[in-house]
Amino acid sequence: MLVVEAFNRNTGLGSRYGSWLLERGLTPKFAYLGTHHEGCGGLWEQYIHQGIDPQGIINKVKQLLG
Image 1 (cartoon, helix red, strand yellow):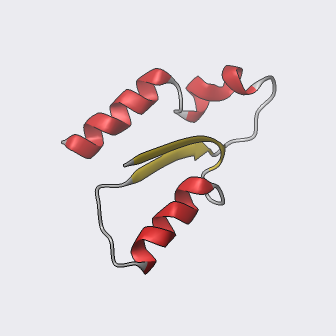
Image 2 (tube, rainbow, N blue to C red):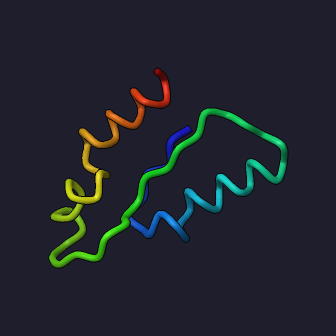
């Protein structure tokens, strides 16, 4: 499972969902991507710098499957 979001990766859905899984004793392959630097401009302008652009997502999926 991969959660990709345009919110802070420390407090967003990915970290909450990961905690939810662990609380229930579930341990699937899991990762999450989200913002981790403040930036200027629109969100789409920040995607590549935050690693949540298409290539960043592909790389994370390959890492999960590898």
